[in-house]
Amino acid sequence: MRLRNTAGWLAWIAVLCALSAALAYQMLAAEDRSLFLPGETTSGHHQIELACDACHVDAFGGGEVMQDACVDCHGDELERADDSHPRSKFTDPRNADRLARLDARWCVTCHVEHQPERTREMAVTVPADVCFHCHEDIAEDRPSHEGMGFETCASAGCHNFHDNRALYEDFLLAHAGDETPTRRLNPHRTPEKTAEGHAPALLPADADAGGVRADPAILDAWASTAHAGAGVNCTDCHGQGARWTDEPELEACSDCHEGETEGFLKGKHGMRLDAGLSPMTPARARLTMKSEAAGRSLDCASCHGAHEFDTRRAAVDGCLGCHDDQHSRAFKGSPHHELWVAEQAGRAPENSGVTCATCHMPRQVHRRGGEALTRVQHNQNANLRPNEKMIRPVCMSCHTLAFSIDALADPELIRNNFSAEPARHVRSIEMAVAREEDATRPTQGNDPRQGEQQR
Ligand code: HEC
Ligand code: HEC
Ligand code: HEC
Ligand code: HEC
Ligand code: HEC
Ligand code: HEC
Ligand code: HEC
Ligand code: HEC
Ligand code: HEC
Ligand code: HEC
Image (cartoon, rainbow, N blue to C red):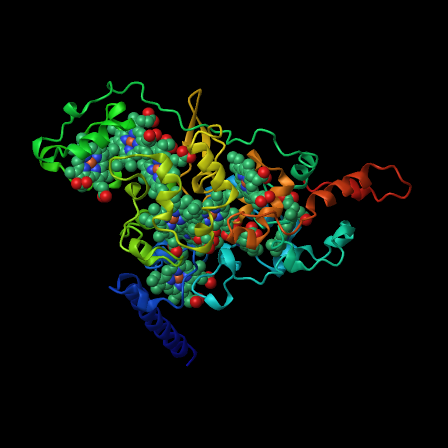
């Protein structure tokens, strides 16, 4: 009897397994996978939602397999962000009690997919007071925090869960007394050319495209660019002879511009190409875009044009060819835009202007061998959210830390593209200073723990 029952169960389990495997197979192999989506995907991933296997790596892979997929795509970025709550913090046995409340070892504890009703900004699917689970006694150690709501820890410009590079106490203290710089310039100059080693500059007569295609307008445009200047000829992008193509693929650029291509593929302009899908178009966007741009594909030529590689045009007017949300529209007329107009007109020094690219595609210095090279970050999502990521590499070249924190904590100011003074003030720096003064003031009965800094 007992034996028969077990066999029955085994058979039943086998049937179930076969069924779910069939379903899973169908889900991953189906023509129209969107039928199987349990709900709208988060704004971070909506572009690649039909590449189910990017996250559901195999039909049965939950837990560890899914985690590996998240870390594959986001691990480097969290590491660069000096993640305040890395997994290693929670595999430490001393924090076992906290894990029992919220298992923060797993990304999906806080970021599930396809559940729009509970999804907040940045694909967070736990409530805004999540910090309470582990920091409920914060006011004991920090009396200044008495009475603060837990939903404000990460929403008021004070802390983030992962990236606190501009918000750490030591950093606040180090910049407490800063004054607005007198020369407000982008410290990174226009990227230098690295043309040495290339052939000498080419002239229209040197074009190697073959008679029919040598349209004079193209020849002139090309001859005036850094490409002709560095000996990059038509066939370097278009291929030779029978392999000539009128529409060079991404590979035509990536061979010579590896870093730019890598950045481009990681952000929302290139992430579909990275996932092996067709290029992103404004028509697929959730953000508001110019209707006339609906059908344009996103590739290198979207901002750079085919033959005029005018990086100044790319930095503002290129963007506004597609973007049409309130913030983007408000840029023209903002004090930053005025600075850019003045620089263009020669009324202000080079690099004193602020463009869309100054904030969203900042110039960064890379080391190659012993040499320092300035390159443009082509992943416009790398410093976008949480927006305090912009403070150190961008705003602090020209503003104080205090001003930058206030400006970025003010949603109205973001909507009008920084056209006024910040309307509110975040008191983080004052709190850090007061705590330090308390800790160094010799009083009797001083609580020894008060001197402890978290970092
Ligand atoms: C960007 C990553 C990602 C992509 C792409 C993705 N999913 Fe998911 N999916 C998730 C995550 C995360 C969960 C939640 C897992 C958990 O709770 O353990 C999930 C859960 C599910 C579930 C379980 C139902 C539920 O709500 O718990 C189904 C079914 C599913 N996905 C189907 C799909 C299908 C079909 C596609 C492609 C059309 C797809 N997913 C694309 C990340 C993704
Ligand atoms: C305990 C909850 C929690 C866990 C676990 C968690 N996150 Fe987050 N994550 C957040 C919150 C909250 C935000 C919103 C921004 C902030 O406060 O840092 C966020 C933001 C993000 C962002 C936006 C960019 C950034 O730098 O903040 C990414 C990407 C991200 N998480 C990826 C991950 C990955 C990958 C994992 C797993 C390795 C993970 N998260 C685990 C809570 C969590
Ligand atoms: C194929 C690569 C890929 C995989 C797999 C992937 N992501 Fe993402 N994710 C992206 C890209 C690209 C973006 C959009 C650009 C950005 O915001 O950095 C994004 C956006 C996000 C955001 C929102 C950031 C914001 O600023 O709004 C979070 C949070 C996030 N991912 C967490 C996860 C988690 C958790 C998993 C695993 C379940 C995961 N991702 C799997 C590539 C991936
Ligand atoms: C699952 C538990 C858990 C959750 C949830 C959690 N933290 Fe933490 N947090 C820790 C641990 C553990 C530490 C290490 C220091 C300590 O023991 O207090 C820490 C440290 C910090 C630090 C100090 C940073 C550092 O590197 O020293 C800050 C700031 C912080 N958390 C903010 C937050 C915010 C904001 C939230 C909510 C968005 C949050 N935490 C949610 C467990 C958690
Ligand atoms: C740095 C790379 C590069 C170089 C060098 C280059 N092109 Fe192009 N060309 C492109 C790209 C990219 C496109 C496609 C633009 C698009 O898709 O909108 C293009 C498009 C074209 C087209 C078809 C579309 C049109 O505008 O008529 C012709 C013809 C052409 N190029 C000819 C030339 C000739 C002739 C030369 C040399 C004098 C040249 N190209 C040099 C990148 C290049
Ligand atoms: C054979 C190598 C080669 C190819 C292929 C190539 N480039 Fe270039 N590109 C260069 C060189 C060399 C420069 C000069 C700047 C430098 O020395 O770094 C340059 C400069 C640029 C500039 C800066 C222009 C300026 O005025 O500062 C842009 C933008 C650019 N390339 C985009 C592209 C795009 C887009 C493609 C593909 C359609 C492409 N390149 C293909 C080698 C190449
Ligand atoms: C969203 C618009 C946009 C796209 C798409 C884009 N670029 Fe750029 N690119 C810019 C802007 C803006 C600058 C100049 C920024 C500055 O000078 O501050 C620039 C500068 C450059 C430069 C010169 C500076 C440097 O980093 O060496 C090169 C080379 C370049 N881009 C190559 C590429 C390639 C290759 C692609 C495709 C993989 C690409 N770009 C896609 C906007 C874009
Ligand atoms: C050919 C059209 C096009 C051009 C040109 C263009 N973009 Fe975009 N941009 C898009 C699309 C489409 C998205 C993805 C929107 C979505 O997924 O909803 C996007 C996404 C973004 C995002 C991320 C938004 C988010 O919420 O994650 C930023 C930031 C951005 N673009 C800035 C720029 C800047 C700065 C420039 C100029 C240097 C520029 N774009 C040029 C079409 C364009
Ligand atoms: C002074 C810096 C700065 C300048 C200049 C700037 N932005 Fe932004 N941009 C931001 C910040 C900060 C955010 C908000 C990020 C967040 O908190 O979600 C943002 C958000 C965005 C978004 C995402 C909007 C959304 O609703 O998700 C897009 C798209 C964008 N900017 C495009 C542009 C374009 C195009 C220009 C130029 C016309 C521009 N930005 C100029 C700082 C800037
Ligand atoms: C290259 C220098 C530069 C950079 C980078 C820069 N700004 Fe500015 N910003 C200025 C200058 C100069 C003004 C002119 C108004 C003034 O005199 O304060 C200004 C004005 C402003 C204003 C309006 C102030 C008012 O009184 O109307 C705000 C807000 C602002 N910036 C925020 C930011 C934020 C946030 C960032 C980083 C995302 C940033 N800025 C990056 C130079 C810069």
